[in-house]
Image (cartoon, rainbow over all chains, first blue to last red; front, side):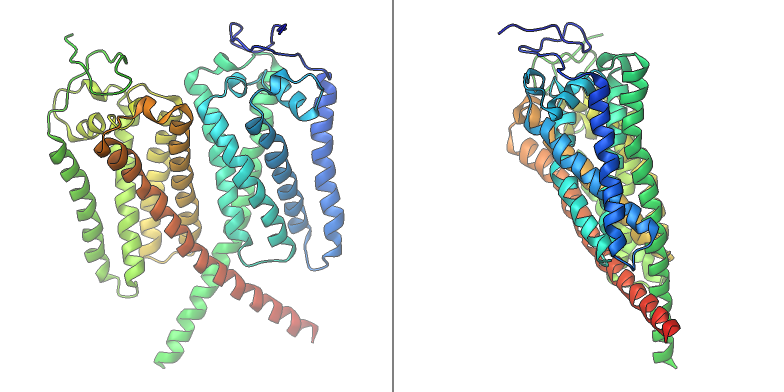
Length: 227
Length: 227
C-alpha cells in the first residue's frame, strides 16, 4: 500500500495507507457551514407553522436539529470509521475529518478520551437532540430538563477537549497556522462552549421561574389548609 | 533517593521516589467510608432544625455535602499534588490515593483525561455542591437546575472514566484482584453512576411538574385574555 506523507503533527506520526484530501478546504468548509446554516433556516421556516412558538423557541429548534445532525452524522462517522484517513472516494464525511485532523491529530491516533467522548456525543447526545426538537415543537414539560442535561454534556465534553489538549501541550497534536489553530481548534469548538452556555441560561431562567411559582402555589395551598 | 518497587500496573512503570503505604488498607477504607457516613448522618441530624424540609430533602443535603467534600478535599488533593506517591508522612489524603492507584495507575502517570476531569470535579463541581446544600436548606428556586447540571457532570465524568479505561484495555492500568477491580475500580466509582442518576430523576420529576403547572397557568391566563 503506497502511503502519502500526511499533513498532521507530530510529523513522525505513522498513518499507514493515508490518502490526502480529495476536495480543497474551501469546498469542505463551504459544505459544512453551508449545510449547517441551511438546517437552521429550514427549521426556522418549517416551525412557522407552529403558531404558538415564539422566535426564540424556533431558533432553539433550529440549533438542536443542526447540532444533533452534526453529532450523529459527522461525529458518528469519525467514531465508527477509525480509518477515515485512508478513504480514496472523496466522501465528504471523511474529507471533513481529514481536514480537521490538521487541528487535532488525536482523531487519527484514536486517543481514548477523544474516541469515547465523541462516542457519547454522537450516540447519546445526538439522538437526545432530536428528542429535544420534538419537545420544543410540542412544548413538552420535560424539554427544559432535557436541554439542561444535553447542553451541560456538550459544554463539559468541550471543556475537557480543550483541557486535555492543553495538558499534553497545545502544539503536540495541533498545527500552528492560524486557520488550523484559531479557526478549527479554537473557533469551531468554541461554538459548543457559547451556545450550550446560552441554552443553560435560557432553560435556567424558565425552570427557576416555574419552580418559584410552584413553591408559592404550594405555600398558598398549605396556608389555606391551615386557615 | 531510594525507590521502593510500587504495587501498580503496568509493573514496568517508573515512579521515582515511590514510598509504600504507611497505613494498612483497612484503616484507609475505614477512614474514607467512616467519615463519609459521618458527614451524611451529621447533615441529617443538623437539617432536622429546618422544620419545613422532608426526609428526602434532608438526605439529599447529606449527599451533596458528602460528595462536595470528597470532590474538593480528596480529589482536589490528587489534582494539586502530582507526587502523592512520594509522601512519607502517612497523610491520609495521600494514603487514599496510593491505595486507589492500585485500581488505576493513571493517577500516578498523570493521564491527561484523569487530571483534567478530576480538576473540573474538584474545583468546579466541588464548590457547586456546597452551593447546592445551601439551595436545598433554604429551598432556593435554582436548586433543581443546579442539581441537574452537577449530577450530569458527575455522571458524564464517571462514564468517560470507565470508557477511557476500557478503551485502553481494562487490565492495562488496573490490578485484577477482586478488591482492586470490583471493589475500588467498579464499586467505588459506581456510587457516582447510581446516585447522580437518582438525583437527575428526582429533579426531573420536580422540574417537569413545575413547568407543566406554569404552562397550564399561562394557557389559562391567555384564554382569559382572549375571552
